Length: 304
Ligand SMILES: [Zn+2]
Image (cartoon, rainbow, N blue to C red):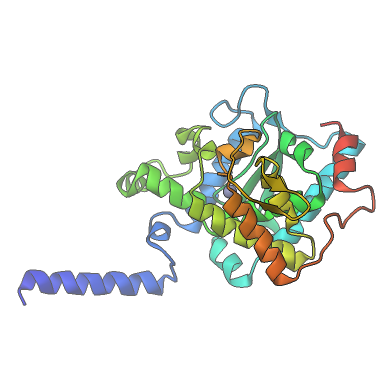
């Protein structure tokens, strides 16, 4: 073996040992750590807060729970989101939280890592960015027909965060060498804003969507609320969807929902979710928390 090959093999071995010693799960994590993800999300969120045009569309603004009815809706949304976060498996959660004081100058815990926001907007969509920042537009909240739909989509978005889908998309989009340049130079925090509002409204890959659907199902099942909401919500945009059986027979895609710009619709996807429910024997209610009115009542009362 030539010296050149010896160096190559020793270097490769050292790389693998380093990779494993750091407890890292993927090469994307080598490039963008959980701390980097948090920093990206934090900078993105600070732009949302001030309504910066790079991340907010015309007429969009951050939702403030500034009336009694809006506060009831806000608390309800936060409580459901917390249930979903509590349903995340410990290993997944541990792999998500950066070490160090990344969350409001404290160490990140499951209670302070995620932030769930609402944006006043006519867009019927929801999205998550790295670092645990999840956004729902008011128009999608108005579109949901049950608590199950809200919690299913919350679970799906949390699934994107848990599986680092946005991070992996960023790495793919801007390339490893550009990321290394950013890390060595100005830092990675402003990356999401620089990519522009269009980036997080581009289509997620089918694999990422499927993976998040499975996690969304898992969380709703663990919480004890019907997982039918995912089929109902996505099925509404498909002409052949049968709400009674939760199945659709042909993939006549519809552009009725903005959410399909980022979440590709398909009968197959809806049917897979319905199948999961049937196989699990699940028989949970679509509306569970109705003490102050069920979810759709609260949305109406808030006048969003
Ligand atoms: Zn998605």
